[in-house]
Image 1 (cartoon, rainbow, N blue to C red):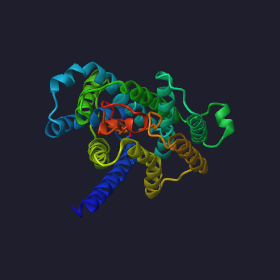
Image 2: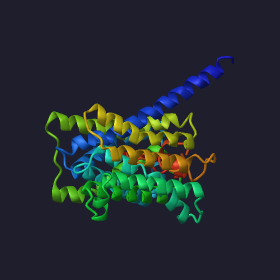
Image 3: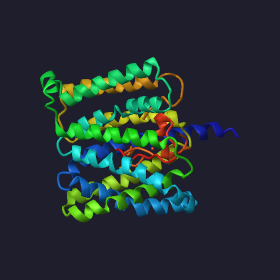
Image 4: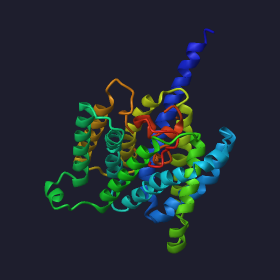
Amino acid sequence: MSSAPGSESRGRGAAIAALVATTVFWAGNYVVGEIAVRSIDPLSLTFLRWAIATPILLVLAAIIERPDWRAALRALPRLAVLATLGMIGFVLPLYEALRTTTAVSAALISSVCPLLIALVAGIALRERPGGRMIAGLLVGLAGVVLVVSKGSLDALLRLDLAPGDLWVLLAVVCWTAYTVLGRRAAGVPPITSVAVQSACATILMLPAVAILGVHLPTQAPAIASLAFIVALPTIGSYLLWTIALRRIPAAGAGIFLNLIPVFTVVIALALGETIAPAEYVGGALVLAGVLLATWTGRPSDRTPTPPDAGPDTQPDAGADAPPAARPDAQPAAKTGASDDQADART
């Protein structure tokens, strides 16, 4: 009996380590994704990510959760809508963005998503956002504007913005819709939900792939990038998130998602990328806005979440995207989203 407190402490420490690793992997999706799109077009990268991950996720769901597959099939229309928004609508624009903007800019812009989710969810559920939420949203949006404009008022007034930054904003809108719509979903275990959504995303992309073709990576860097994205941001992060939420409350775990832009900057710097002063200041404003909005002392639906997905995403409980007490709640960790959300965003 005397060892119980020590065991509990070790368990919590392992959960915290899992959460940190999760955010590192999701941050890696931005940086490695920027490398991958140099040789794999965004459509092929998105399709291959989910096509490869789907059978692995289905097997893991069958082994770990032993779900009622008939119940999952009954939820198929709802899961298909979520897959369209979270696993295609977030991930595809994000990879398209990384062709013309940096991983750091994409991560910083995406990090305003928690505030937008909280605001939209509050309006949709007729809950008036509090003063802290509004102030946090304004501060966070100011940071996004600074990052997008690169600190140039002239560029902002002329709307001379990088196309990639606009693609990121589209991804943020899709992730916000994914999270808010998923809040009312229920009933499918988290890994099963992500697996079925992944399968739906793969199938829904088949027409586009049939018309435009899918380009398989042939060079070692591209193959390594794809393997990393599938293994760590898509599958590894989701499983680590699942493990961590057995020890850490969802609202507490959600705070760790704010580390994604921080780790993205660290990884980018380690790889030799230069970061503009406006991005440092803008990123600090975004994080300040998130903290202002979420540190209210009340774990509630106003505790918002990003990205992959984040998803990684995600998904009653990311994947890059992105997903309360179970891993599907990667968005839920900050917004009270339901079982069927996962990190498809990061």
